[in-house]
Image 1: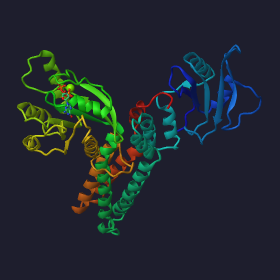
Image 2: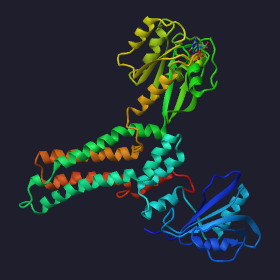
Image 3: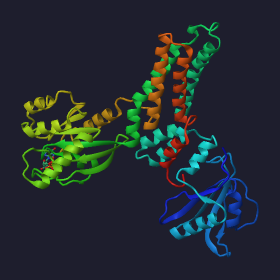
Image 4: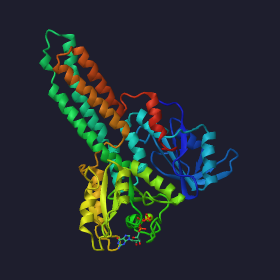
Length: 456
Ligand SMILES: Nc1nc2c(ncn2[C@@H]2O[C@H](COP(=O)(O)OP(=O)(O)OP(=O)(O)O)[C@@H](O)[C@H]2O)c(=O)[nH]1
Ligand SMILES: [Mg+2]
C-alpha cells in the first residue's frame, strides 16, 4: 500500500525551547519545502545536506529563520521522502511555520502516522513500530535497553524463525492432505512442534519481567502505625518526602512516589498504618485506602517492628494482603530485636514470604538487601539479557499460538485427519503473525498506533 498524501507534524514538544522541529513525509515533501523556504545560498536540494534560509508567508514576509534537510525514500524513517525543518522553538514561530507547510499542501498527521507509514512501507515490522513508543516512554535505562533490543528486531526475527518451523510441518500436513496414500503420518514431526511450544512458553515466562521493566511495578508499604513505613519510603527516595513522627497515625492518606530500583520503575505507595480500633474518622478513611492498596499492589512490603512484640494489628495487616506476594521487613534493626517477634512474624501467614529482610532507616543497615530482594522478586530470576517480550498484546498472541500448537500435537497423537491438524497449525501461524504484523486487521493497527504521540 502506498499513501498518496503528504503529512506534517511537530516532532518536538510545544512550549518554549531553543529549537522546534517538524517533519514532513510523502511524495510532496520536497516540493512543499521548495515552496515554503528560500535558502540563503541558491542551488539544488541535495539529499541529507542541511541548508539555512527563511520560511516566508504567502505575501513574502519572513516567518522565521530555519535549517532544513531532505531525505529521499526509501532510506528514511517512513520509507517515503522526508523533510525536516527546524525553526525557533517558540509557540508562534512553530505554529506559523507549520501552518505555512499545511497551506502548501501537507495534511496534519494523525498520532503515530509516521511510524505507521514505516510499517506499511515494510521498513519495520509491527513489533519494532511498538518499540518506538517504548523507547520514548522508557522510564529507566534498563527499560530503554529492552525497548532498543525490540527496536533492533530480535522479536521479529525470533518470531519469523518459529513461524518457519511451523510452516515446515504445515507443508508436510498439506502434502498428506493432497497425497494421503503417498505421505505417511510419520512425515509430520510433532517433536519439532513441541520444541516450538517450549520456546514460546519460556518467552511467556520471561514476559512478566519484561512487562515490569517496561511498565513498572506498584510496591505497597504496609504495617501497623509507627512501624516505620514513611521512614522507609524516605530512605528509598533518599529525601524526606513523607512526614515521620513518633505519633501513631502520622500518615493519613496514601502517598505515591516514583523511584528507579535496579532499573525497574517502581511506584512506592506509603500508606496509613492499619489498625482496627481507630476512632478517628479521617484515619479510618485512610486505613480503607491502605486496604485497597494492599489488595492491588504488585508486591507488598509488610513492615513489622522487630524491636517490639507482635500485636493484633500486625495480623490485620497480613490479612489485608491475603495470599498475594509479600516481602517481610523487620524494621528498627538498630534497636535490640525481640527474637520471638522475628520467629512469630515469619509465621504470620501460611504461604511463605518472598523474602525476609531486617532494616534500619537510622543506620541504613539492610537497605541494600531489601533493594536486592525487591529486584529479585520483580524480575523473578529472569535472565539478565534484554530480549524479553514486554507487551501484553504479544503475550496474548504467544498464548494463542502455544494453545493451537498443543491442539495440533494432541490431534497428531490421536491420529486425527490431516485437515483437522492443518486448521490448528493455521491458527498458530496466524496468531504469531499478529506480533510482527503479517496477519493484522485494520482495527488492530488503529489500537496499536493510538498509543503514539503526534509527530512520531
Ligand atoms: N530506632 C529506629 N527508629 C525508627 C526507625 N524507622 C523509624 N523509626 C521511628 O519510628 C517512628 C515512626 O516512624 P514512621 O516512619 O513515621 O512510621 P509509620 O509507619 O509511617 O507510622 P504511621 O504513619 O503513623 O503509620 C518515628 O519516630 C521514627 O523516627 C529505625 O529504623 N530505627
Ligand atoms: Mg507514616
